[in-house]
Image 1 (spheres, rainbow, N blue to C red):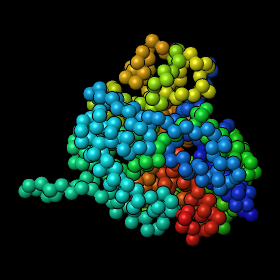
Image 2: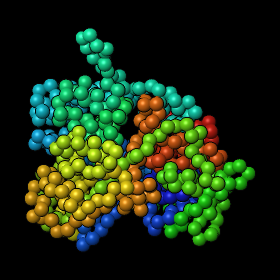
Image 3: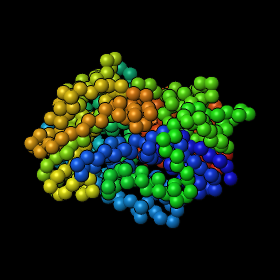
Image 4: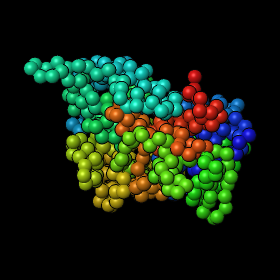
Length: 500
């Protein structure tokens, strides 16, 4: 039985802790804050409750696996999951509206034909067939295996089977980025392009530079569906915490780690801000990569091999929480995406040299049908989320413009508004410890490895990295996958090759 210290109580860290405890190890989690969950925060006021991080769960199979492998009670006995229907309503810049069904390829095609014109569904279906090939080629090495020393294979090979377009007297051309897929393979319809590019933008990725392999992002959502958790996503974090406690994982809150202790050339424990120390045979760091570097013995970069190029300038999120009078209409979709009036201007502002918010950016509006989030059925809790530059200071006027823009999804919103609360990139930084509130994106293949994340192993033997800032990157499913990979590497050793 090994002694294991886990730094942080995020979802990836708790996944690893539960799996390691079941394997017979003695696990203690040191969390600098006063609660668990990492990005899955919660804000409560006047009987209203809001998720301050992700509001929906994609690919729930990842957490089903965690609960199956760590106890007798499956995930559905610990939280109530509801498949959202429709999966999403899109309000495009020209006013076109379409509702896309959940996990129904045929239904999505029919909806696109009806809203955007005949042929739109067929073009999208052809793209999704290519996205399926991308998923089949990239899934295991990208998501289910540790990042091995030959990670360059993932960086060099583009798994997306782009269509080659022949042009008279000019070189043949095929899509290398998500934006080029929209231009070359979706007929250039600005609404189909906006639909495609939203999947990148929602993860803080610039579709103009994001590799075509990002086709796996819409494939995952539209194939496996999206789910709501009764009581909010915080209920999922609570269930995982309780599973850890049931497996005798020890949690110490208000315990900021100031240094990773090295002894005889390997990780030997941690030192805490109060001067105490925790000895360990293994240390699992569920913190942002910049924070991990600060904890390193002697300030040495601990990330494995240091060869993965990685990304810089990762954006954050701006969230506005709305308390409304009047009940939620039964016909209201759970999620609506209101697209930017000018997508090019939005991308220039977000990813340009002087980052900022567009006047009317793409906003995701969540209207959960959940009585546990409101004081009574005469009120509604609504959440607005926008991808925003890290470190950005949000002005009251920008928040007000965002509320006005969201009226396309919630008619009469202004007349119903009781109060609102703004959660800025600074609040994200406080909750997660990331630099400027940056939110990690999922790992992607191709582009020379520039969209991969550092390996779960590090330069220091006995030290492992878990969570969104390590392989396989950000997002709730990916966090759970990282926890499974770290547990496998510790339990089975360097020969671990992922789940079978």
